Amino acid sequence: MRTVWFMTGNPGKVREAQHALQPLGFDVQQLVVEGIEIVEPQCNDLEIVARSKLKQAKPHLPSRGDALMVEDAGLFVDGLKGFPGAYSSYVLETLGCSGILDLMEGHKVRAAEFQAVAALLLDDRVHVSRGVCRGTIAMEASGDEGFGFDPIFVPSPIERNGEHYSTNGLTFAEVSLSVKEQFSHRRNALEGLFELLSTIDSASSS
Ligand code: ITT
Image (cartoon, helix red, strand yellow):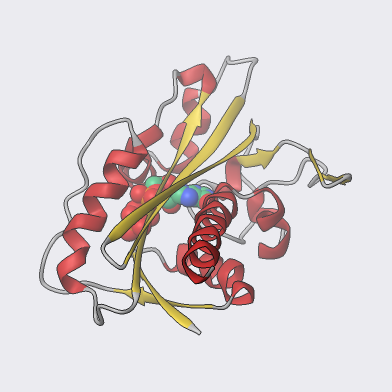
């Protein structure tokens, strides 16, 4: 089993990555870098943020043969012109879910999306993949599962491989991790990344 060191301070993300990647043969470990502050550039492009975090984390990879992963995500609300977007962490800490609900007062259109960019460093090469999850901002916060903005986000129903998936109006915080995963931006980004890697693996072994 290959080890993937996931540099993040968010245990919710680690749980989701383990759940998604273990069945694909990857052992996901959280990498906590002590004593230095990882600086996140304040810009609206998650890929730039993810690449910057990866570069800063590289000297701290425990073993050169292992993979290093970072992931940057955010909530982009259509009616707020994409806010909080790349500023999601700061906005969650300061305004919280209730602050987003306040900003949405009077907005009839409550469409929003989660975006995630996962970046992986393996054998000195960087691989990047994006995931998106469309949905709406709920009228009120509900549920205790998940983390972050999950209590105010209702994913849109989707069709995949002929199957229909819907949470029937429940927020991500009201459903189990397995259900969130059917829609999740993070799951999409991680799957894309590891599909990319499996094509590289099969190309190099043929
Ligand atoms: P890192 O250490 O990995 O950067 P973080 O929690 O700061 O962890 P991000 O910057 O990627 O993560 O995320 C920005 C914010 O968006 C953060 O407050 C998260 O809680 C929130 N967020 C990200 N993914 C989410 C998800 O799947 N559900 C709910 N909120 C999410």
